[in-house]
Image 1 (cartoon, helix red, strand yellow):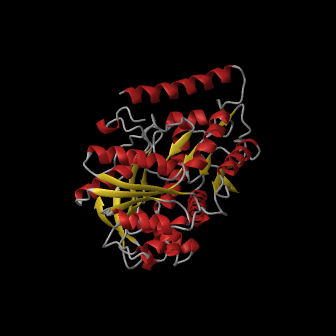
Image 2 (tube, helix red, strand yellow):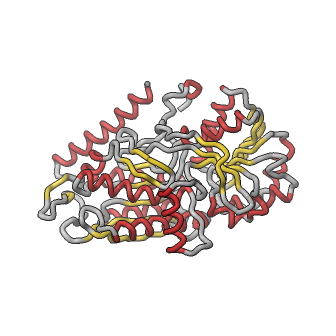
Image 3 (cartoon, one colour):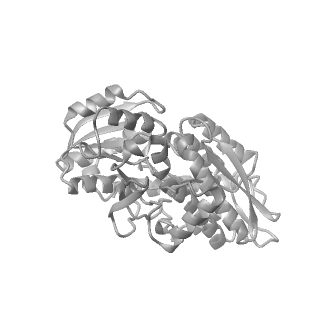
Length: 420
């Protein structure tokens, strides 16, 4: 309950600050009716007077994270094309400004500032690592603009200027731990990249493990982009762990899983459950290195539903039959449709209008029905555990069966009390 109060207070303080700045005529969105029947944001340079509305995409198209983030850019462009073909948003055609975050948090922040202040976009979609999101957060809060962040993350955050359409920890990491526990795992080795997401995720995993009789026998980190995993894999092999929880990101996974196989480890001898490896990464790592391994997400290409069938077919038609779809791609695709639904519910594009309209907005996404929580700006999601099969795709071996409400501050978990 303490965390509930803190979140509400934090949002209220920022909202109150925004109102105060509005009164002073500072740069804060304020809805004003226009002749087009939409709204214009005073104090920002967002132009809603014409037949188009600008939005920004910021993804790593170069650097170590490009292996993952180019796919997110592709799915965002697909969603934009579909929305434009169907008439746009509030009658306006989407005009896309694409920027390259270059796998560097400082560049993400610079590009976010450019998109907001120079390109005058109504909202920005993108980011992957928590380091990039943390770098961009003050830019969006200072400009009172909106970021739609599409990747699972470590939780413990709720900004009034960010909508989180990837999973928070109680929708991915905790279900993954529940699954391992249900399989009889009592000892675990943690391997992660050395930045905020793996460090925070592993703090949560350690707290869960202590409360649930699971021994953490080792915890190792490597710099983002690191490619020599011989020392870490030797420690994993000698640990006697029953399984490995992997929070590595980017192309470090390629080197890790190749070394894992070279050391004689396999999904049968010591399974690895990952939270940043999806269908797109399997090809880069090499199926022979990861077949049989596990991943925790909220979407797999193999989900059977009319919405997913259409999404997969449309993506392949646009980018090629050899392409695959994955969770972050789907969450990004879904984020653009959620923003569209919020803008149409609001009848405008300003931050104030979008956030006021957000609560309860739903979308029949490829992953299933998702609903926006207007208080913490996360969405409900169904948790899935998948296994990499011989076709290179992830197939569901466990599901929460129903969407899990987002609990970014783990307020409903007694073992987390006093840990934040």
